[in-house]
Image (cartoon, rainbow, N blue to C red; front, side):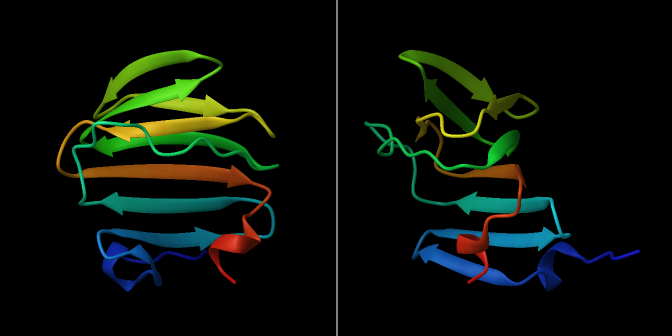
Length: 111
């Protein structure tokens, strides 16, 4: 069994106000992304990846955008993204914490 405390997970700085912590197995990755740069007036640029994704909103509020639809999500809500599907978020609060699960693991998050 592998267990780690949040503050002991490796930290990958995305930018000055966004950071990612990850833990993973051979086929599954959990990434905790902390945002401290909201709220935003526009969504982040859309992106896609070959990984399947499920996200839990642990803190804050976001606008989730996919397939031309928008959904206001807050703490306790979840969303999923199929492989290759363009999607985006817009921060609606000053801070947010998203817990992302990916399969397969995102090598770009650890390399």
